[in-house]
Amino acid sequence: MTPPSLHKSTLAQDTTTHAKIKIPSKPPPSSDDIPTTLTKNTTTNTLFTTLPPYNDARPNEPITECIIRPEIKDTILAIPGFPHPFTTPDPPRYEIKLIRGAGMGMVATVDLDVGDVILAERPLLVTTQLLQRAGQLPWQHPHHLQRMVVERMPKETAEEFFALHNCKGYTQPSITGIFNTNAIGIGALPGYPADCGAVCKVISRVNHSCSPTATWAFHVESFAVQLRAILPIRKGEEVFVNYGTRGQRLEERQQYLLRRYKFKCACPPVCVPVSRK
Image (cartoon, rainbow, N blue to C red; front, side, top):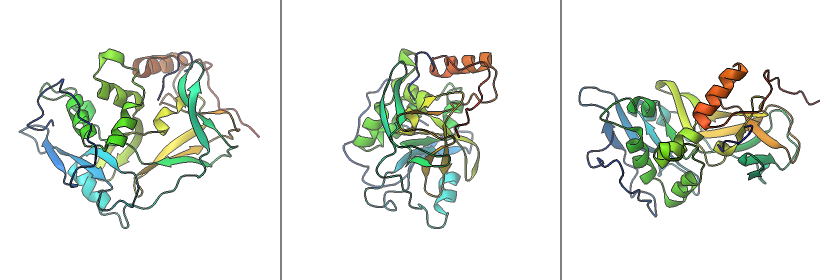
């Protein structure tokens, strides 16, 4: 997500806050999970793991690095046929390009009707609310967890992650800033009732509007995020999603967007989607 200027655990051996990140040149030699215990006095554990597992992924199929609890993984792997195959339109129905006054954004390359799939992709990273909770604990910081999971990524995936925008500047470590700038809500995962977040290579670059023209949905069976048009979008028009301000008054929207993404939208006080018939 690129904020527009106008409208827009740690493992035992990982104790150094400012350690240099090493990007691996190839996937880990095995798909074994790395467990990490949140505290010595709790049974709440989490895993650094890969979904789909390397052995289950189809040739050239993207995989997702995850920071999740064991019961989530167990429940997902028990889904019959997991991972289900997913497809994305070919040729692409969008392009990512520089938008004047808004950084990078998504532009439609074909006319899109309501319900049309614009894109489907596996996230680069999926996490539970662990990161938010960890930031409140003196012995743990979300940056440690995020750094560990990025180190597990194949080189190409890590490069895609670091290519995303960081609106937090020097106020947060780069990995944490990229996560907090680009994470999208994907709802609850099986075996875990609270909201989870995902960082995507493409969908995380779609800009905000209080009157969005598209929305995303996470499909756990394929472990992929799908972006669909919710209004007709003409070829050459920018595609917009909502960053979580629906139903809020102008002042509330502006405060939320400024606090979370460091920009104020230029939307009208009351945002009503335009019907294009």
